[in-house]
Image: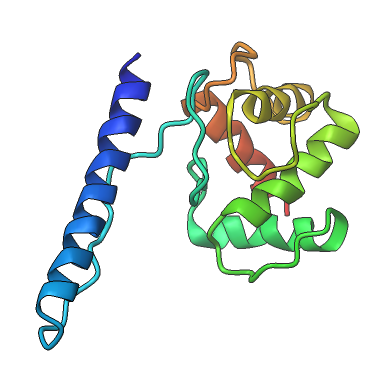
Amino acid sequence: MRAITWTFVTVATTVGLAAGGMATASATPTTPVAPVAPASAPAAVGAESAVAAVVNLGLNAEEAKKLQIVQRDYWGYNGAIDGQLGTNSWKAMQRFLAAHWGYGGAIDGIVGSETVKSLQRWLQSNWGYEGAIDGIAGPATKAALKRYVATL
């Protein structure tokens, strides 16, 4: 429940700030309005939440770039190798998970619980993940993903 609340508050705040910035921009067209940076809250990826933004699951930019290169070479990723695992990166991951690890959801790039469950099955089978297959990308899931990327 906390993850849902946190996600809702983060999204509502970001949308509210963006809308306020647009209202200010239209009210005073000669005054430049700086873009509003999103809150630096951790992305909530859990059983009841889905995130369509950048979700690196604990990987730094260099690690994420390595994963994007594999995704480009094998799973149809055609975006920038920029270290930001966004929608296109996760679509490539979902294609991999659908082909081999029981992912049956839409190839939509949203890191929801079904994506995470399939990721956990793969990490459990190959990269030392010992947690539950619960669809929550917690510390053990992130650590196992880092172990995989370290081999690339």
